[in-house]
Amino acid sequence: MTAHRKSHLFYQTKHRRPVLDQARGVYLWDVEGKRYLDGSSGAMVCNIGHSNPNVLEAMRRQMEKSTFGYRLHFETESAELLAAKTAELTPEGMDRAFFASGGSEIVESAIKLARQYAVAMGEAMRWKVISRFPSYHGATLGALAVTGYTPMTAPFEAMMRPMPKVPAPRAYLDGLDPEDPETGLHYAAMLERKIVEEGPETVLAFLVEPVGGASTGALVPPSGYMAAIREICDRYGVLLIHDEVMSGGGRTGKFFSGEHWNVVPDILVVSKGYAAGYAPLGAMAAKDHIVDAVLDSGGFIHGYTYAGNPLACAAGLAVIKEIESEGLMDKAVSIGTLLKSRLTALMDRFDFIGDVRGKGLLLAFELVSDRKTMAPLPRELMAYDRLVEMAYARGLIIYSRRTRGGYEGDHFMVCPPMIATETHVDEIMENLTAALEAFSALVTPHLKRTA
Ligand SMILES: Cc1ncc(COP(=O)(O)O)c(C=O)c1O
Image 1: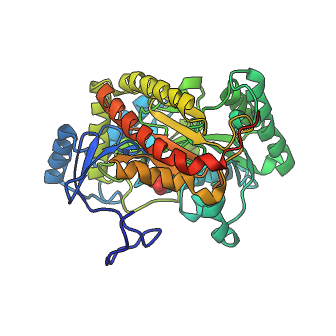
Image 2: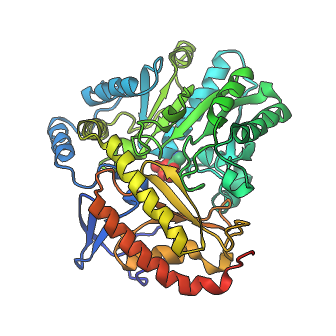
Image 3: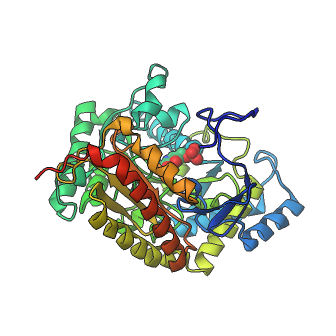
Protein backbone atom coordinates (compact mmCIF):
# COMPACT_ATOMS: atom_id res chain seq x y z
CA MET A 1 0.00 0.00 0.00
CA THR A 2 1.05 3.57 -0.56
CA ALA A 3 2.63 5.06 2.53
CA HIS A 4 0.67 7.49 4.66
CA ARG A 5 0.27 10.85 2.95
CA LYS A 6 -1.48 13.93 4.20
CA SER A 7 -5.18 13.82 3.54
CA HIS A 8 -8.34 15.04 5.21
CA LEU A 9 -10.15 11.80 4.43
CA PHE A 10 -10.13 8.67 6.49
CA TYR A 11 -11.30 5.09 6.04
CA GLN A 12 -10.25 1.93 7.95
CA THR A 13 -6.53 2.56 8.26
CA LYS A 14 -3.92 5.25 7.75
CA HIS A 15 -2.69 3.55 4.60
CA ARG A 16 -3.89 5.11 1.42
CA ARG A 17 -4.20 3.92 -2.15
CA PRO A 18 -3.08 5.71 -5.31
CA VAL A 19 -5.48 8.34 -6.61
CA LEU A 20 -7.83 7.09 -9.33
CA ASP A 21 -7.73 9.02 -12.55
CA GLN A 22 -10.05 7.19 -14.90
CA ALA A 23 -11.77 3.89 -15.51
CA ARG A 24 -12.91 2.27 -18.78
CA GLY A 25 -14.26 -1.22 -19.31
CA VAL A 26 -12.33 -3.64 -17.08
CA TYR A 27 -9.43 -1.23 -16.48
CA LEU A 28 -8.67 1.62 -14.08
CA TRP A 29 -5.74 4.07 -14.25
CA ASP A 30 -4.21 5.98 -11.37
CA VAL A 31 -2.96 9.56 -11.72
CA GLU A 32 0.59 8.25 -12.30
CA GLY A 33 -0.69 6.44 -15.38
CA LYS A 34 -0.42 2.93 -13.93
CA ARG A 35 -3.11 0.58 -15.27
CA TYR A 36 -5.03 -1.94 -13.11
CA LEU A 37 -7.28 -4.76 -14.24
CA ASP A 38 -10.40 -4.69 -12.05
CA GLY A 39 -10.37 -8.39 -11.21
CA SER A 40 -12.95 -7.93 -8.44
CA SER A 41 -15.20 -5.30 -10.07
CA GLY A 42 -14.40 -3.08 -7.09
CA ALA A 43 -16.20 -4.92 -4.30
CA MET A 44 -18.14 -7.11 -6.77
CA VAL A 45 -20.03 -4.00 -7.90
CA CYS A 46 -19.00 -2.86 -11.39
CA ASN A 47 -20.56 -5.84 -13.14
CA ILE A 48 -20.93 -4.22 -16.57
CA GLY A 49 -17.52 -2.52 -16.52
CA HIS A 50 -16.62 1.11 -16.08
CA SER A 51 -17.82 4.17 -18.01
CA ASN A 52 -20.40 2.40 -20.16
CA PRO A 53 -21.51 5.11 -22.65
CA ASN A 54 -25.17 4.00 -22.71
CA VAL A 55 -25.45 4.23 -18.94
CA LEU A 56 -23.69 7.59 -18.87
CA GLU A 57 -26.05 8.87 -21.55
CA ALA A 58 -29.14 7.65 -19.64
CA MET A 59 -27.85 9.33 -16.49
CA ARG A 60 -27.12 12.55 -18.37
CA ARG A 61 -30.67 12.56 -19.79
CA GLN A 62 -32.07 12.07 -16.28
CA MET A 63 -29.83 14.80 -14.84
CA GLU A 64 -31.08 17.23 -17.44
CA LYS A 65 -34.66 16.51 -16.33
CA SER A 66 -34.19 16.32 -12.55
CA THR A 67 -31.62 14.98 -10.11
CA PHE A 68 -33.83 14.84 -7.06
CA GLY A 69 -37.51 14.51 -6.37
CA TYR A 70 -38.54 13.84 -2.82
CA ARG A 71 -40.79 10.81 -2.53
CA LEU A 72 -43.31 12.57 -0.27
CA HIS A 73 -43.71 15.31 -2.87
CA PHE A 74 -43.42 13.55 -6.23
CA GLU A 75 -43.48 10.23 -7.98
CA THR A 76 -40.60 9.95 -10.42
CA GLU A 77 -40.72 8.21 -13.75
CA SER A 78 -37.36 6.45 -13.38
CA ALA A 79 -38.27 4.99 -9.95
CA GLU A 80 -41.62 3.83 -11.34
CA LEU A 81 -39.96 2.23 -14.37
CA LEU A 82 -37.29 0.55 -12.25
CA ALA A 83 -39.96 -0.81 -9.89
CA ALA A 84 -41.81 -2.27 -12.90
CA LYS A 85 -38.56 -3.77 -14.19
CA THR A 86 -37.81 -5.19 -10.73
CA ALA A 87 -41.26 -6.81 -10.67
CA GLU A 88 -40.51 -8.36 -14.08
CA LEU A 89 -37.13 -9.74 -12.91
CA THR A 90 -38.23 -11.06 -9.52
CA PRO A 91 -40.37 -14.21 -9.09
CA GLU A 92 -44.09 -14.00 -9.81
CA GLY A 93 -46.12 -12.46 -7.05
CA MET A 94 -43.44 -9.93 -6.08
CA ASP A 95 -44.89 -6.94 -7.83
CA ARG A 96 -43.68 -3.96 -5.86
CA ALA A 97 -40.25 -2.64 -5.04
CA PHE A 98 -38.70 -0.32 -2.46
CA PHE A 99 -35.41 1.47 -3.15
CA ALA A 100 -32.50 2.58 -0.97
CA SER A 101 -28.91 3.72 -1.52
CA GLY A 102 -26.94 0.56 -0.80
CA GLY A 103 -26.74 -2.92 0.65
CA SER A 104 -26.85 -2.17 4.38
CA GLU A 105 -29.81 0.17 3.94
CA ILE A 106 -31.75 -2.35 1.91
CA VAL A 107 -31.06 -5.20 4.37
CA GLU A 108 -32.37 -2.96 7.17
CA SER A 109 -35.43 -2.30 5.02
CA ALA A 110 -36.07 -6.04 4.58
CA ILE A 111 -35.78 -6.71 8.32
CA LYS A 112 -38.18 -3.87 9.08
CA LEU A 113 -40.69 -4.95 6.45
CA ALA A 114 -40.62 -8.50 7.84
CA ARG A 115 -41.10 -7.22 11.37
CA GLN A 116 -43.96 -4.93 10.42
CA TYR A 117 -45.62 -7.77 8.55
CA ALA A 118 -45.49 -9.98 11.66
CA VAL A 119 -46.97 -7.17 13.76
CA ALA A 120 -49.69 -6.57 11.17
CA MET A 121 -50.54 -10.29 11.25
CA GLY A 122 -50.92 -10.25 15.04
CA GLU A 123 -47.59 -12.03 15.62
CA ALA A 124 -45.71 -9.29 17.44
CA MET A 125 -43.74 -11.90 19.40
CA ARG A 126 -41.76 -12.71 16.24
CA TRP A 127 -38.58 -10.62 16.15
CA LYS A 128 -35.57 -12.94 15.86
CA VAL A 129 -33.81 -12.98 12.52
CA ILE A 130 -31.69 -16.10 12.17
CA SER A 131 -28.70 -15.77 9.88
CA ARG A 132 -25.53 -17.75 9.20
CA PHE A 133 -21.99 -17.75 10.45
CA PRO A 134 -19.99 -16.56 8.60
CA SER A 135 -22.08 -14.07 6.66
CA TYR A 136 -22.08 -10.40 5.79
CA HIS A 137 -25.24 -8.34 5.62
CA GLY A 138 -24.01 -4.79 6.18
CA ALA A 139 -22.31 -2.29 8.45
CA THR A 140 -25.24 -0.44 10.04
CA LEU A 141 -26.15 -1.73 13.50
CA GLY A 142 -29.30 -3.60 12.42
CA ALA A 143 -27.58 -5.30 9.50
CA LEU A 144 -24.49 -5.90 11.64
CA ALA A 145 -26.55 -7.75 14.27
CA VAL A 146 -27.38 -10.37 11.61
CA THR A 147 -23.82 -10.44 10.27
CA GLY A 148 -21.49 -13.28 11.20
CA TYR A 149 -17.99 -11.85 10.92
CA THR A 150 -16.50 -11.45 14.38
CA PRO A 151 -13.90 -8.69 13.92
CA MET A 152 -16.60 -6.43 12.49
CA THR A 153 -19.30 -7.24 15.02
CA ALA A 154 -17.34 -7.66 18.29
CA PRO A 155 -16.76 -3.97 19.15
CA PHE A 156 -20.47 -3.25 18.79
CA GLU A 157 -21.97 -6.29 20.50
CA ALA A 158 -23.04 -4.37 23.60
CA MET A 159 -25.03 -2.02 21.40
CA MET A 160 -26.88 -4.64 19.39
CA ARG A 161 -29.59 -7.17 20.14
CA PRO A 162 -27.86 -10.54 19.57
CA MET A 163 -29.47 -12.54 16.76
CA PRO A 164 -29.25 -16.34 16.46
CA LYS A 165 -26.80 -17.85 13.96
CA VAL A 166 -26.50 -21.23 12.26
CA PRO A 167 -23.36 -22.47 10.51
CA ALA A 168 -23.01 -21.64 6.82
CA PRO A 169 -23.10 -24.91 4.85
CA ARG A 170 -19.34 -25.17 4.24
CA ALA A 171 -19.24 -28.81 3.18
CA TYR A 172 -15.69 -28.44 1.80
CA LEU A 173 -14.40 -27.60 5.31
CA ASP A 174 -16.41 -30.30 7.04
CA GLY A 175 -15.27 -33.07 4.68
CA LEU A 176 -18.79 -33.57 3.27
CA ASP A 177 -19.76 -34.09 -0.37
CA PRO A 178 -21.57 -30.95 -1.59
CA GLU A 179 -23.27 -32.96 -4.36
CA ASP A 180 -24.87 -35.37 -1.90
CA PRO A 181 -28.42 -34.18 -1.02
CA GLU A 182 -27.86 -35.54 2.48
CA THR A 183 -25.27 -32.80 2.94
CA GLY A 184 -27.85 -30.10 2.20
CA LEU A 185 -30.29 -31.70 4.60
CA HIS A 186 -27.58 -31.93 7.27
CA TYR A 187 -27.07 -28.15 7.25
CA ALA A 188 -30.77 -27.33 6.80
CA ALA A 189 -31.51 -29.46 9.89
CA MET A 190 -29.32 -27.03 11.86
CA LEU A 191 -31.77 -24.26 10.93
CA GLU A 192 -34.73 -26.31 12.08
CA ARG A 193 -33.02 -27.13 15.38
CA LYS A 194 -32.23 -23.46 15.91
CA ILE A 195 -35.84 -22.40 15.23
CA VAL A 196 -37.10 -24.98 17.71
CA GLU A 197 -34.47 -24.02 20.30
CA GLU A 198 -35.34 -20.31 20.02
CA GLY A 199 -39.08 -20.96 20.13
CA PRO A 200 -40.69 -20.92 16.66
CA GLU A 201 -43.26 -18.33 17.75
CA THR A 202 -40.40 -15.83 18.31
CA VAL A 203 -38.62 -16.36 14.98
CA LEU A 204 -39.36 -13.75 12.35
CA ALA A 205 -37.08 -14.63 9.43
CA PHE A 206 -34.12 -16.54 8.08
CA LEU A 207 -31.72 -14.31 6.17
CA VAL A 208 -29.41 -15.99 3.69
CA GLU A 209 -27.07 -15.19 0.80
CA PRO A 210 -28.04 -17.90 -1.76
CA VAL A 211 -24.52 -17.79 -3.24
CA GLY A 212 -22.24 -16.44 -0.55
CA GLY A 213 -20.35 -13.18 -0.86
CA ALA A 214 -17.11 -11.99 0.68
CA SER A 215 -17.52 -13.59 4.13
CA THR A 216 -17.64 -17.18 2.85
CA GLY A 217 -15.89 -16.53 -0.47
CA ALA A 218 -18.58 -17.37 -3.05
CA LEU A 219 -19.96 -20.33 -1.13
CA VAL A 220 -22.36 -22.39 -3.26
CA PRO A 221 -24.93 -24.22 -1.12
CA PRO A 222 -24.82 -28.03 -1.17
CA SER A 223 -27.45 -30.03 -3.02
CA GLY A 224 -30.86 -29.96 -1.42
CA TYR A 225 -30.07 -27.10 0.97
CA MET A 226 -32.07 -24.27 -0.60
CA ALA A 227 -35.26 -26.32 -1.09
CA ALA A 228 -34.97 -27.69 2.44
CA ILE A 229 -34.61 -24.28 4.10
CA ARG A 230 -37.61 -23.00 2.13
CA GLU A 231 -39.64 -25.93 3.40
CA ILE A 232 -38.49 -25.45 7.00
CA CYS A 233 -39.31 -21.73 6.93
CA ASP A 234 -42.80 -22.52 5.62
CA ARG A 235 -43.35 -25.14 8.30
CA TYR A 236 -42.65 -22.67 11.11
CA GLY A 237 -44.16 -19.53 9.56
CA VAL A 238 -40.68 -17.99 9.27
CA LEU A 239 -40.06 -15.56 6.40
CA LEU A 240 -37.21 -16.43 4.03
CA ILE A 241 -35.16 -13.38 3.01
CA HIS A 242 -32.61 -13.71 0.21
CA ASP A 243 -29.75 -11.25 0.52
CA GLU A 244 -28.72 -10.91 -3.12
CA VAL A 245 -26.86 -7.65 -2.53
CA MET A 246 -23.78 -9.22 -4.11
CA SER A 247 -25.12 -12.33 -5.85
CA GLY A 248 -27.99 -10.53 -7.63
CA GLY A 249 -27.64 -8.62 -10.88
CA GLY A 250 -26.58 -11.48 -13.12
CA ARG A 251 -23.03 -12.29 -12.05
CA THR A 252 -23.84 -15.94 -11.19
CA GLY A 253 -25.50 -16.52 -14.59
CA LYS A 254 -29.07 -15.91 -13.37
CA PHE A 255 -30.36 -12.47 -12.50
CA PHE A 256 -30.96 -13.63 -8.91
CA SER A 257 -28.82 -16.49 -7.66
CA GLY A 258 -31.79 -18.10 -5.85
CA GLU A 259 -33.12 -18.94 -9.35
CA HIS A 260 -30.45 -21.64 -9.67
CA TRP A 261 -32.50 -23.68 -7.18
CA ASN A 262 -35.97 -22.41 -8.17
CA VAL A 263 -36.49 -21.21 -4.64
CA VAL A 264 -38.77 -18.21 -4.17
CA PRO A 265 -38.04 -16.14 -1.05
CA ASP A 266 -40.63 -14.00 0.75
CA ILE A 267 -38.41 -10.92 0.55
CA LEU A 268 -35.43 -10.33 -1.69
CA VAL A 269 -32.81 -7.57 -1.66
CA VAL A 270 -30.20 -6.62 -4.24
CA SER A 271 -27.74 -3.75 -4.51
CA LYS A 272 -24.19 -3.77 -5.84
CA GLY A 273 -24.70 -4.97 -9.42
CA TYR A 274 -28.12 -3.33 -9.68
CA ALA A 275 -26.67 0.02 -10.65
CA ALA A 276 -23.18 -1.49 -11.04
CA GLY A 277 -21.36 1.36 -9.32
CA TYR A 278 -22.86 4.11 -11.53
CA ALA A 279 -24.97 5.34 -8.59
CA PRO A 280 -25.68 4.18 -5.02
CA LEU A 281 -28.76 1.93 -5.23
CA GLY A 282 -30.39 -0.94 -3.38
CA ALA A 283 -33.72 -2.59 -4.17
CA MET A 284 -36.13 -4.74 -2.17
CA ALA A 285 -39.00 -6.80 -3.53
CA ALA A 286 -41.47 -8.73 -1.40
CA LYS A 287 -44.45 -10.98 -1.93
CA ASP A 288 -47.55 -8.90 -2.56
CA HIS A 289 -49.45 -10.11 0.49
CA ILE A 290 -46.58 -8.90 2.71
CA VAL A 291 -46.52 -5.42 1.18
CA ASP A 292 -50.32 -5.22 1.23
CA ALA A 293 -50.57 -6.28 4.87
CA VAL A 294 -48.02 -3.66 5.92
CA LEU A 295 -49.51 -0.85 3.83
CA ASP A 296 -53.04 -1.74 4.99
CA SER A 297 -51.98 -1.72 8.62
CA GLY A 298 -50.97 1.93 8.60
CA GLY A 299 -48.00 2.03 6.25
CA PHE A 300 -44.35 1.00 6.09
CA ILE A 301 -42.71 2.88 8.95
CA HIS A 302 -39.39 3.31 7.25
CA GLY A 303 -37.75 5.53 4.66
CA TYR A 304 -34.61 7.26 3.50
CA THR A 305 -34.16 10.72 2.00
CA TYR A 306 -32.69 9.13 -1.11
CA ALA A 307 -35.19 6.26 -1.45
CA GLY A 308 -36.18 6.11 -5.11
CA ASN A 309 -33.68 8.77 -6.14
CA PRO A 310 -34.36 9.48 -9.83
CA LEU A 311 -30.71 9.53 -10.90
CA ALA A 312 -29.88 6.26 -9.12
CA CYS A 313 -33.00 4.63 -10.58
CA ALA A 314 -32.16 5.86 -14.10
CA ALA A 315 -28.68 4.37 -13.69
CA GLY A 316 -30.18 1.07 -12.47
CA LEU A 317 -32.55 0.88 -15.41
CA ALA A 318 -29.77 1.56 -17.91
CA VAL A 319 -27.49 -1.02 -16.27
CA ILE A 320 -30.19 -3.72 -16.42
CA LYS A 321 -30.86 -2.83 -20.07
CA GLU A 322 -27.18 -3.29 -20.81
CA ILE A 323 -27.06 -6.66 -19.01
CA GLU A 324 -30.00 -7.85 -21.09
CA SER A 325 -29.10 -6.38 -24.48
CA GLU A 326 -25.47 -7.51 -24.32
CA GLY A 327 -26.31 -11.01 -23.03
CA LEU A 328 -23.99 -10.42 -20.08
CA MET A 329 -25.43 -13.22 -17.94
CA ASP A 330 -24.51 -15.76 -20.65
CA LYS A 331 -21.06 -14.20 -20.81
CA ALA A 332 -20.75 -14.53 -17.02
CA VAL A 333 -21.39 -18.26 -17.46
CA SER A 334 -18.94 -18.82 -20.34
CA ILE A 335 -16.12 -16.59 -19.07
CA GLY A 336 -16.80 -17.74 -15.50
CA THR A 337 -16.45 -21.39 -16.56
CA LEU A 338 -13.15 -20.61 -18.26
CA LEU A 339 -11.83 -18.57 -15.34
CA LYS A 340 -12.87 -21.19 -12.80
CA SER A 341 -11.14 -23.97 -14.73
CA ARG A 342 -7.95 -21.87 -14.99
CA LEU A 343 -8.07 -21.12 -11.24
CA THR A 344 -8.65 -24.80 -10.50
CA ALA A 345 -5.63 -25.70 -12.65
CA LEU A 346 -3.51 -23.53 -10.32
CA MET A 347 -4.10 -26.14 -7.61
CA ASP A 348 -1.67 -28.49 -9.45
CA ARG A 349 1.03 -25.89 -9.18
CA PHE A 350 0.37 -24.36 -5.76
CA ASP A 351 -0.49 -26.94 -3.12
CA PHE A 352 -1.51 -24.22 -0.68
CA ILE A 353 -4.66 -23.56 -2.74
CA GLY A 354 -7.23 -25.64 -0.88
CA ASP A 355 -10.45 -24.86 -2.74
CA VAL A 356 -11.80 -23.04 -5.78
CA ARG A 357 -15.53 -22.31 -5.75
CA GLY A 358 -18.38 -20.16 -6.98
CA LYS A 359 -20.84 -19.78 -9.82
CA GLY A 360 -20.59 -17.80 -13.04
CA LEU A 361 -18.31 -14.86 -12.32
CA LEU A 362 -18.78 -14.94 -8.55
CA LEU A 363 -15.62 -16.96 -7.89
CA ALA A 364 -13.09 -17.39 -5.10
CA PHE A 365 -10.14 -19.52 -4.10
CA GLU A 366 -8.99 -20.32 -0.58
CA LEU A 367 -5.49 -20.87 0.79
CA VAL A 368 -4.70 -23.55 3.38
CA SER A 369 -1.62 -24.96 5.06
CA ASP A 370 -2.78 -28.52 4.42
CA ARG A 371 -5.22 -29.47 1.68
CA LYS A 372 -6.15 -32.75 3.40
CA THR A 373 -7.26 -31.24 6.68
CA MET A 374 -8.06 -27.79 5.23
CA ALA A 375 -6.14 -26.30 8.16
CA PRO A 376 -5.72 -22.57 7.54
CA LEU A 377 -2.38 -20.81 7.12
CA PRO A 378 -1.06 -19.22 10.33
CA ARG A 379 -3.07 -16.05 10.83
CA GLU A 380 0.09 -13.99 11.51
CA LEU A 381 1.14 -14.67 7.92
CA MET A 382 -1.65 -12.27 6.86
CA ALA A 383 -1.94 -14.13 3.57
CA TYR A 384 -5.25 -12.45 2.77
CA ASP A 385 -3.53 -9.09 2.80
CA ARG A 386 -0.15 -9.99 1.35
CA LEU A 387 -1.30 -11.81 -1.76
CA VAL A 388 -3.70 -8.97 -2.59
CA GLU A 389 -0.79 -6.52 -2.34
CA MET A 390 1.44 -8.70 -4.52
CA ALA A 391 -1.27 -8.79 -7.19
CA TYR A 392 -1.96 -5.06 -6.80
CA ALA A 393 1.70 -4.27 -7.38
CA ARG A 394 1.38 -6.15 -10.68
CA GLY A 395 -1.72 -4.18 -11.67
CA LEU A 396 -4.28 -6.84 -10.78
CA ILE A 397 -7.05 -6.10 -8.28
CA ILE A 398 -8.54 -9.03 -6.35
CA TYR A 399 -10.55 -8.94 -3.11
CA SER A 400 -9.87 -10.93 0.03
CA ARG A 401 -11.34 -11.76 3.42
CA ARG A 402 -10.60 -14.05 6.34
CA THR A 403 -12.52 -17.28 5.79
CA ARG A 404 -13.14 -18.58 9.29
CA GLY A 405 -15.50 -15.90 10.62
CA GLY A 406 -12.91 -13.18 10.23
CA TYR A 407 -10.06 -14.42 12.43
CA GLU A 408 -8.15 -16.82 10.24
CA GLY A 409 -8.28 -18.47 6.86
CA ASP A 410 -7.68 -16.59 3.64
CA HIS A 411 -9.83 -16.46 0.53
CA PHE A 412 -9.67 -14.30 -2.56
CA MET A 413 -12.53 -13.25 -4.80
CA VAL A 414 -11.71 -13.20 -8.52
CA CYS A 415 -14.76 -11.52 -10.02
CA PRO A 416 -14.01 -9.35 -13.06
CA PRO A 417 -16.84 -7.48 -14.79
CA MET A 418 -19.17 -9.60 -16.94
CA ILE A 419 -17.75 -7.91 -20.07
CA ALA A 420 -14.34 -9.59 -19.48
CA THR A 421 -12.99 -11.52 -22.47
CA GLU A 422 -10.64 -14.50 -22.80
CA THR A 423 -7.76 -12.05 -23.23
CA HIS A 424 -8.64 -10.47 -19.90
CA VAL A 425 -8.75 -13.92 -18.30
CA ASP A 426 -5.23 -14.55 -19.70
CA GLU A 427 -4.04 -11.29 -18.18
CA ILE A 428 -5.64 -12.07 -14.80
CA MET A 429 -4.03 -15.51 -14.77
CA GLU A 430 -0.61 -14.23 -15.78
CA ASN A 431 -0.50 -11.66 -12.98
CA LEU A 432 -2.16 -13.90 -10.42
CA THR A 433 0.28 -16.73 -11.15
CA ALA A 434 3.22 -14.32 -10.77
CA ALA A 435 1.80 -13.08 -7.46
CA LEU A 436 1.28 -16.65 -6.22
CA GLU A 437 4.84 -17.53 -7.21
CA ALA A 438 6.18 -14.63 -5.16
CA PHE A 439 3.87 -15.59 -2.31
CA SER A 440 4.99 -19.23 -2.52
CA ALA A 441 8.41 -18.34 -1.08
CA LEU A 442 6.75 -16.81 1.98
CA VAL A 443 4.28 -19.57 2.57
CA THR A 444 6.28 -22.75 1.93
CA PRO A 445 7.88 -22.97 5.42
CA HIS A 446 4.36 -22.88 6.91
CA LEU A 447 2.82 -25.74 4.93
CA LYS A 448 1.88 -28.86 6.90
CA ARG A 449 1.38 -31.37 4.03
CA THR A 450 -0.21 -34.32 5.85
CA ALA A 451 0.92 -37.58 4.20
C1 LIG B 1 -24.42 -9.92 0.89
C2 LIG B 1 -24.23 -8.49 1.30
N1 LIG B 1 -25.18 -7.87 1.99
C3 LIG B 1 -25.06 -6.58 2.39
C4 LIG B 1 -23.93 -5.85 2.09
C5 LIG B 1 -23.80 -4.42 2.55
O1 LIG B 1 -23.79 -3.58 1.44
P1 LIG B 1 -23.20 -2.08 1.50
O2 LIG B 1 -21.74 -2.20 1.71
O3 LIG B 1 -23.57 -1.51 0.16
O4 LIG B 1 -23.90 -1.38 2.61
C6 LIG B 1 -22.90 -6.46 1.36
C7 LIG B 1 -21.66 -5.73 1.07
O5 LIG B 1 -20.64 -6.29 0.77
C8 LIG B 1 -23.05 -7.82 0.96
O6 LIG B 1 -22.10 -8.45 0.26
